[in-house]
Amino acid sequence: MHRTVAIILLAFATHWVHAKQTSRKNATAAPLMIEALGKGTFALSGPWQFHTGDDPTWANPTFDSSGWEKLSADQPWGKQGHANLTGFAWYRCSIALTQAPGVPQEFSLLVPKIRDPYEIYWNGSLIGHNGKLPPSPVWYISQPMQTFELGQVQHGVLAVRVWKAPLLSDDSGEFGGFDTAPLIGSPEAIATVKAAYEFQWLRSRQLHFGANLLCAVIAFLSFLLWLRASDRWVLFWTAGFAVAQPAILLLVNAHLGLPYSLAMGAAEPLSGMQDISLWFLLLWLLSLHENRVICRITRIFAYIYIVSEVLDGVLIALSGNPQWTSLAQISDAVLAIFSFLFELFPLVLVGYALFQRKQFDSARWLVAILAFLDDMLLVFSYTVKQGRQFTGWAIADKIDSPLFSLDGNGISLRTLAGALLLVAIVYAVYHSVREDQHRQDALELEKMELLHESNRMRHHAEHDGLTGLWNHRVIVERLSQEMIRSRRDGTPMSVILADVDHFKKVNDSYGHLAGDIVLKEIGTVLSRSLRPYDCVGRYGGEEFLLILPNCGMESALIRGEQLRVAVQSARIQDGETLLQVTASFGVASVLRTHHEAEAIIRAVDAALYRAKSCGRNCVISAEAEMDASICNF
Image (cartoon, rainbow, N blue to C red; front, side, top):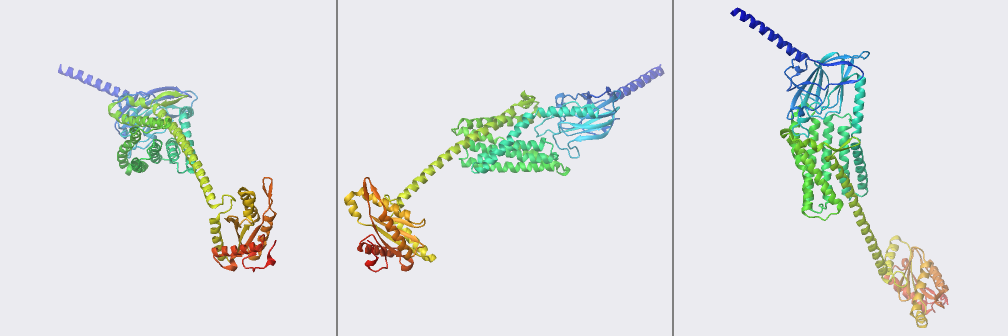
């Protein structure tokens, strides 16, 4: 009896063990069947076997993964129960494939999107990767899609090794692993699908690219305008705010062939420059630049912020080196906290402007409101995205999800707020520059009016009000200056003093108005008869003083005679009355006398007196003797 029972139990145990082994073997070997794969593609949506942790032997096709969890590849693992997962996780999928008749046996794999660095293994061999994995795991944003060659496929095991490190990043474990199921197919079919994906990807971002192009144009024009008017710093900060976004787009998303660590390292200071430019724009547009304390605080924060961003960029650039990876991650975490605090500074500036009850126009109020809204969305977004790793807040997805689509382009709340802020800044800066230009034009007009008035007053102070010639003070000063120059250069200079003959009779016979007309006409005659560099002024009453540089005594006497004839020939009309007058002239030479200005004036005055004594209407030299033979009647 005992022997019978033992035999039965042994048989049952043997059957159970065999069934268990068969079950485990089936669990491991149960492949995803793909039959008659032709010119199209097949989506490897699953089920995939999934496990957290890391062991390189998990890529081996003989590894028993029957106890692993099963997930699909049509959505991230965070939405399938692993939202808080960090570190490594593996996918495995067994494939059995038969191709359609006439189709080559060569096949390729297309991975549309995995947001984290990953490696692809086929039958235990590494066939490609995207990003950097141990011994130096670093968080990377993967490219939109990758293609891997599988070779001649009949059956095998596809394994995917993914690294997820969301802490202090703007991503979370909710999006770990696949976003979209990989595709398998012939190289031609995969190339066609990839081209279609890329076309759709570009089309869905054409509005984004257009907006960045517009930002670049705005930045370029603002910088050119600032070069023309370097005192308008609001244009410089507009250029800095507008150029950062397209520059970051080129570095990170344009696939320039730069290492990702280097591209992201260069993008960090650009991001900081955009924030700092917004600070100084708010200072100018909200009229806070007049507050020295606020300006000083802003400058200090700007220096600290840009230094921290440059340091963060350097650390990110060095993170590709294994020996710097750990330090870079720790430093990046610390600097991320400081960056988050600096993101709050625009709220402080806007709040202070509101507290001071600044009187703004509608454009500046719009900038203040949109800057407040944009920064609040940014801060709230960062807070929620960090917190959802531990809370599972669903609102985190709604912040970046499109409010609506425009020709395939998703427009989110943050995108809309950022675009409106840029438009408001451009309009406010344009409005501010136009106001400054109007004020500058008004100041220039006022300056021109003041200059004109100053010139008019100086003209009245230096010129005789009746004749328009130099007045007594100026012509005497000019005589002294010309005498000094003449002696310095060793050149001759002569002086002529003219007096209208019998001028009192003109006033008595025809009135003072007629006398004024005579003086004006005589002044005009003398001015027209002189060289461009000669000077003439009203010395007093009916006397005129003439200065003749580079003119000796003989030439001066000839010029005096010419002037005498011109005065005598002048026809002066006072209404119906024809007035004809003569003048007497005294001449002296500075080089020959070597006297001072007062002495020269006394000399020509004495010569003029002798001319009057000789019967008037004549020219007498200061050195001539009283000789009637030189008198002209």
